[in-house]
Length: 300
Image (tube, rainbow, N blue to C red):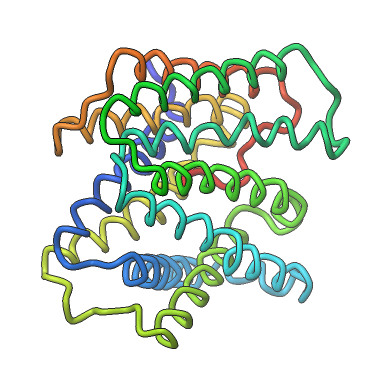
């Protein structure tokens, strides 16, 4: 039987995993990428601040330095918004299931970068993870190449993983100093500012073309796959610990693949399925026995 912590982490992964499906459905209802990014993070930031103030937890603001607040806002406004932008731009061009697997190459990227930066030593576990992830990625793409593999969409999917890895490496210091609640609140706030300002300046936000159903899917992305998913993850994290929480999060692409099949009939071929399993095994390998597993910011 699952422990409470494991259940919370799996529920978080499921909520994150549903985001690609919500996004595809939103696109069918007149939502553009710029509109999605702006509305998603405005709703998410508003919900986070309402929670912080409504539950009397705004006291952390007095304990933060101006430098850390600006860093967290910048991480959201530059890193997290860029990562989300690449993800949803890729989602316009490739299947949600394929994108979910491409995204989950990021833990191996983080492991390699941490070694290059001197943050952790080389190990057989990291070498195994990189080998598995690389082989899995080749199989996933090779299997897709037999169908209608979109080069730009694929490149954007891999870019999402690269930007996500960079974001995690950049955010670990400030995340450790200010804590998950403050980090999430300011990251969502920064991520709301950038796409909204850019969208208003360039005219990319088109709220009038969105149907009522489209606003429903946007709300689901913001509340279920952003605020809810993050809250569930950080609720389960202290119960099961960072390593177990990170490994349990690999349930996310599994949910994406299953929901994409149920909603759109997206089906991975046998070669892609094997590749997907290798990618997930790489995540487990890279997280096992790490002293600082990748838990800075789950989801995309």
